[in-house]
Image (cartoon, rainbow, N blue to C red; front, side, top):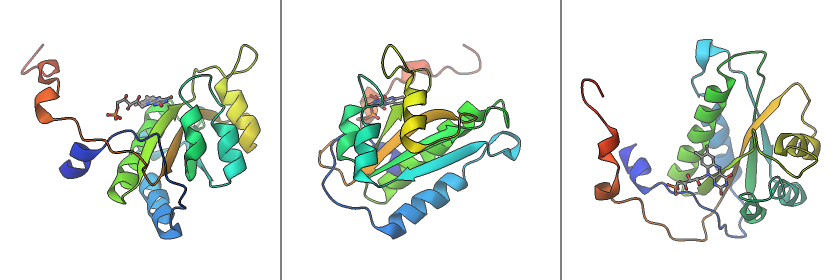
Length: 172
Ligand SMILES: Cc1cc2nc3c(=O)[nH]c(=O)nc-3n(C[C@H](O)[C@H](O)[C@H](O)COP(=O)(O)O)c2cc1C
């Protein structure tokens, strides 16, 4: 696990290459193995491999989503806030599980934040993504994870650049 964490980076450029179904199945399994508060599992995941839909999703925000256009897979991470008051935490864990699993399979990924973001002056990013993927109004859209075979080289953050000063011992 530590090797996965040491080499993980956000990837925003992807090769024009499909992800094998076996790898997608492993990502699905990993997400469904996420822990959640009181095991409420308030999440729903929409796996998108349709290029036209991915292109539409890449327009979810004015900034920070355009790169998704080249992704082979986009996973909309949604949550039902009525099922659990920890839906944001639960969705975040599932999103990170998907990213770490993707990396372990030789894939790159990047989180595109959707909740509390705007598509335009008229609609939120959540409303936009709901419209593109026919997601029911009862669900919140937390994030979209873009994934694919990486088309950029990025080193892990060197250990001596980690912010060890943010860790305190036996009190602040
Ligand atoms: C909560 C959260 C929201 C993020 N939203 C976006 C986003 O909307 N667009 C984007 O390109 N990257 C997004 N990222 C990726 C961060 O920019 C990235 O993790 C950060 O710059 C550190 O880089 P690294 O992941 O390569 O270590 C997000 C990451 C997190 C954890």
